Image 1 (cartoon, rainbow, N blue to C red):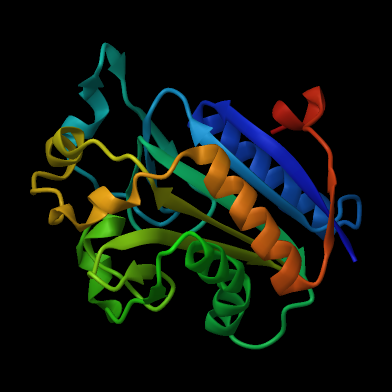
Image 2 (cartoon, rainbow, N blue to C red; image 1 turned 90 degrees about the vertical axis):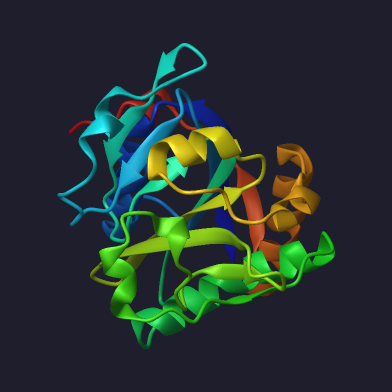
Length: 234
């Protein structure tokens, strides 16, 4: 089976979310193959879960390195994520049967395998439904999230299912700024277990793409986004 691999794209959060939603809809219609892509947010942003309607007022006016942080709504659920120094992955696919958690774990196979190649063992979080009371996605780790052996939440994922099609995307914290994190969430950044996770984006993507190919038994066709896909109709 061949999947589409979209090269790394840096763009505003509202653009990235529109692209993910568009790819899901086109896959559901049979117009687009299963897809893996990686992207970064420019300017940095706070993304809110689809059902997250309450958040601190000061989030609307945070300035970091001369730029105002964007505030963006995701099409997926979950809590707020600070997108700075992170790499986001997105998988659009179909044919994954079973529960929502089984779909999470099937897709997360490539993340676990790839990071193992990079020397980092990941396991699923254990937090229960209490996470909904924490506005910070990375403040708790549920069974949909991946945590290091030190308890550091490296990857937080969220999912949207439409019919047989699934969009799963998630933030991988590579080089987070502790000061900005504290400014946004009003709490200290987790203990410095993350300092050993200072991997560059190119190495991380290359390793994760290879792991996805092996885990899903697929080959990738590299296809950059077209202009219409970067600016999909609303």
